[in-house]
Image (cartoon, rainbow, N blue to C red; front, side, top):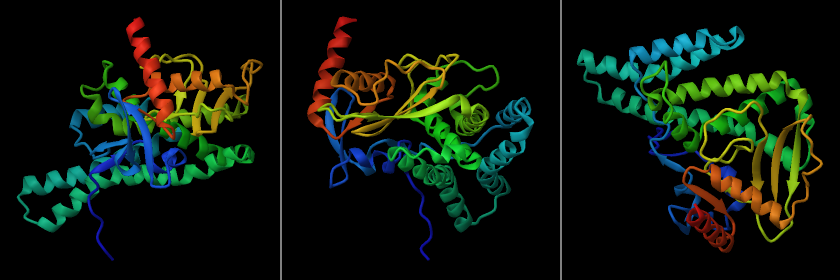
Length: 314
């Protein structure tokens, strides 16, 4: 069996998620960096070494343990195991280096693990998440009535929400009382927060509902490198509102809303108009880190004109 090779390019926006917007050649239209272009799925929605394990310092680890100790008791052991799994490869590498042990093969394998472990971990989570999205597209919400499946769905949803480049960049702009380098600890911290958020929503899941939006207009739903957004936050903001109303495009013709049952839905049309489709798309543009994606270069050119006009007006 061929040995696993180190993965350099890590997808923080999963290729499988972007497939509904791609053409038969696995190419997708995108707008970002001031231009509209088209690229293959292998080279969009990612970054070199995005998930490569960071070597955490002793203060990093101590502060993460302190943070974990302040969380619900039911999840602490799992968080501690994740922290141990994350730090083990870099600790082993450091041990070999400091002891002067010359073992090139061992070092090579450690570098593969350091490059791939977190990327593979997220891929495994996503593989368990896709069936829920397929069910939602078919308006089959029965999984939500099953506690184990509902837990898996909410966990996967919040992993996708927090794993992105946009969230990471915005978090790292904030000062932290505990951590002196948020970029170094964010891979661990984001996973802990996803578990905690998923658990919190699981407890109150009966207060929420899933809605599917259909789009039969000439304006396709777009998506972005921040595919799940809270409609109650401003684009580019990391302010934490009291409530969440999640919007999640599923394809050019479908999107999901995750809302509190108490939310008035009288003004929400499940069969969107052109204006409504464009309004949702502008929210995606406002919340993205660098790029939005579509199956239509023509629409992205129009979106670019709208964005340029908005900038000029400010």
